Amino acid sequence: MPLTLRTVDAAEPDDRRVLVRDDFNVPLDDGRVSDDLRVRASLPTLRHLLERRARVICCSHLGRPKGKRDARYSLEPVAGVLGDRLGVEVAFVDDVVGDQAARAAQQLEPGQVLLLQNLRFEPGEEANEPDFADRLASLAELYVDDAFGAAHRAHASVVGVAERLPAYAGYLLASEVKELSRLLEGPERPFVAVLGGSKVSDKLAVLSNLLGNVDSLVIGGGMCFTFLAAQGHEVGDSLFEPDQVDAVRDLLARAEREGKRILLPTDVVVADDFVEDAEHRTVPAGGIERGWRGLDIGPDSAKAFAAAVRDARTVFWNGPMGVFEWSAFEAGTRAVAEAVATTDAYTVVGGGDSAAALAKFGLDDKVDHLSTGGGASLELLEGKDLPGVNVLRES
Ligand code: 3PG
Ligand code: MG
Image (cartoon, protein in one colour):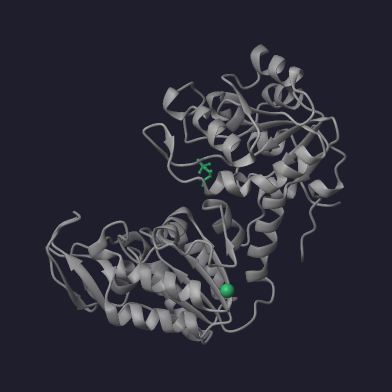
């Protein structure tokens, strides 16, 4: 059933204090934001609120500090980046729901922006403690959730506050839900999903749900070795999850029964060590010797995967095909990224690693929808209800 959300367009934010939950869980390098995709993605909603002369209080988590203050996870560096992108000064307060935060929120004028300290410095956030949710909600009159990447977490800033204030979906969250839902609701065919990344255990539920919707599943990355092993191949020292073999066999059998194509690598780039300058060579996927591990799909597989993408009308891609960060092992991921970027099919890319790969190859603006959600996008595609989306449903 298509899901209708109450969006920020229905809000009356003028002059009012609006608490905006963003997902500013960005990668930091030496205290500097090294990839600001999530900050840029937050801008349309914030610009809208500022045009309406709202008093904007942004909040987010960063990393997993587990309810304790930890300077490594301070959101302060994000305030500068956000301010630059918005073209408005963003004040930062080193407090979440204490007196300092309350005072800073109180002093905001229309058109001003405040960023609170990392929500996860407070134990009440992840536990969705009523007292913490009360205090967070008391900072504002309205609540806007634009943190799609955290929509699968039933935390205070996602669910608790939405139950306490008039709550709306921001533009990012609404568009993520809309675009990802298109993959599950009558996608144009053929629909091909390309899955990679290291662990099959992380992706099995999404593979299983997608199998009902796709025409082909294309499997690369570290997880392909569990598939190859399930087919009886030697995988040498490659990543391999023995406890997933039975589940993978079931999935392969189901695909065959349902007439779905599963495309696995036929050749693999193997290395003698997990280091950037390891000795490496291309071998058939069917027989990787001990002492060698697959770090990328091989050139024949890359061609076949790219062709599968080119033949599709709808493409979903999540997870790199190999260790694309290292140039010797980037070719498979590059081939998939280029095919996804150049097809005129409807293309959706999810997960931080695929987004980073697109950015590395200069292709990140060449897809129809680049999701800011990792776990959240996968859970949505698993067919699960996301708590952060549920609370924003139009009733
Ligand atoms: C993410 O990066 O996937 C989101 O920000 C959620 O982070 P979490 O997995 O720590 O809840
Ligand atoms: Mg396109």
